[in-house]
Length: 148
Image (cartoon, rainbow, N blue to C red; front, top):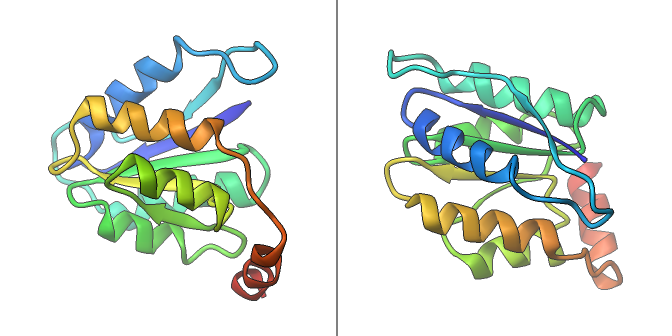
């Protein structure tokens, strides 16, 4: 499975931590995750919309199956990602929200705040999101409305 990742200066450290963690995991087929790192990788100030949209385009265009984005709060980069048609990016701050993002919203991207999320919590949320399955059913109609 291919996962795209991107961050601004406020989220790059958390992105790098989650990236290293993902490189140690196997997907449900027993294969390692392939990570597409779209930057940034430095503390110098950059504009989060550029990185959020780049990651979202990779997901929407099928270059990656899922995406993870990080900025200082997670808010701005999630808004930027959700501007791209076909992307459902959920800003999460708990394992329960990461689980529900997949179960109910079939989120194909997660956003996190580098200034508000510990590396341990980020890893737990990513684990829950990757392992969870979309429920479908009553949620299909709502997803269709989002994607319309």
